[in-house]
Structure formats: C-alpha cells, structure tokens
Length: 121
Image (tube, rainbow, N blue to C red):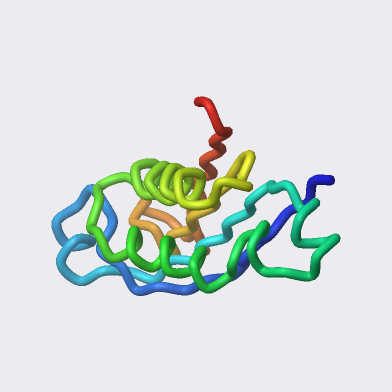
C-alpha cells in the first residue's frame, strides 16, 4: 500500500541566488516536499516506524535550506536525495522551492523550481 507524506508551505529566509546581493541579504523562500512511501507497516501496526516522520523530514529541509547555493535546482536535489537516503520506505520525492520576488526585472510573486527523484536514480 503506497501513500504520500507532505509538508507544504515551509517558509525560510535563505541565501540562494546567482547575484551577490541575493547571497548577502537573502530572500524569503517557500518549500513543499512530497514523499511517496510504502504505508503498509505503519497503517497496519499504528506505529511511526515504517512511515515518514514529519519532524525528521522538516530537519532535512531546514538543514539544506541553510546552505547557500546559486541554484534552487541544487537545493531541491539535495533535499530530495537526502530524503530518499534517510527513509528506507521512501520511493520517490518531489520538492518545490519558490523564491519570492525574484530579481527578473519585472513583477513576479515567486519563481518555483520542482525537483523529482526516485529510488535508484
């Protein structure tokens, strides 16, 4: 039996961006992470082992968001990879990272990058 564990709307002030001012002053980011997993053990035994612990998943996102990077793709991949490596039950991970008011020379609420990773890739 498969299911999905998600954390949505996680907010961080982080220092990701290509431009020096983005890496010095930082910006507001939003992260959504979705983990497809096997729920069989946790559903039948009502036990946290055998599923994805929200707190542990949040800790992974927080740790990776704290590492300045030029590209959101790099951060998204790091979150997805570490999540797959940390949870044996995880089958795939999708990570959305949004940067608010990106410096594109026009009005834009947020720019979003999505990274998808499956076990074995």
